[in-house]
Length: 256
Image 1 (cartoon, rainbow, N blue to C red):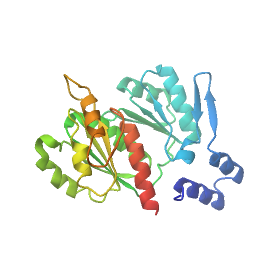
Image 2: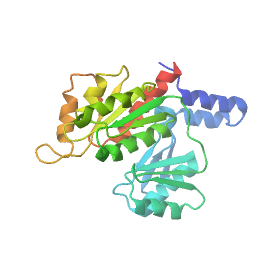
Image 3: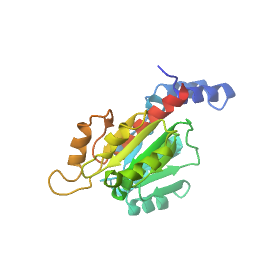
């Protein structure tokens, strides 16, 4: 099994005296939990255990709960992400955490709250492609997550099958990628096309764009699942899942 880069970083911290052996052992266990009142149980060991940061789903949460969860997580682990967040939620988090840095990415609908702790750097590269402009919101979620996991990202947006000639010059700029995330709505053709042209893993993301029979991403999902080209497929609008999966692949590729 490839070396866990985060584990190596932690061992370097122990060697340099930045982290005590006891704290390192606690972090390595991957079972660090912290309760926020009676509303949440934070999984503080996920990044060490899985290489994927804990991401809070803002959608459906009461704003005071969201603020309390993100504040505690950022204070404990240095950085905290929330997905599917509204501008109003982002502003409330910013106002409720004056001692922390709050960034909001409106296209991705992601909040990043931090105490100044840096992101990891893995040197992996993830390419993110969209068929149409309407797919960018999901693509941006994937991009931000991949970058938060330490990867460099390359993008090519609005290069879908309706004007397939746009794809080929775009791919020439993405050849250095270790993994590809391809987002498409309507009939969802683009991921299969890309998978037939590149020699790296491709993750297809069906987007809830389209109307009528099997609209809202269902036709795109079915099309990707029936692809003759080899690709992995995530759920409709699952930008986070695709970005995290691609970052895991890219980081492992670079660690060899």
